Length: 119
Image (cartoon, rainbow, N blue to C red; front, side, top):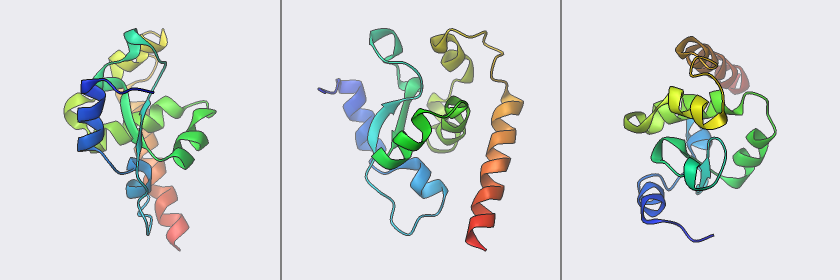
């Protein structure tokens, strides 16, 4: 896949996996640029980019609430381009399908799981 200039800029700014870093992995793996939802020209916007290693991308890809997890990471690692409503719109959902409270709750759960796995 040939990256656009915007995609190259994003990848240069975010070369490591957000999930590896969030989870406190001993080794943070190199990231690939992935879309939070959908692909294609309509979906090729900075707010829809995420930086995940192949392992974490595959783990999230088939998950029901993968967008919410990616929004937690987007808010943490690329806050200026975080746009929950746009992600809902790109997915074809109402802009309130995923609420700010959903993202907050997911972040708390992810934090709890991270602490539990360290015990």
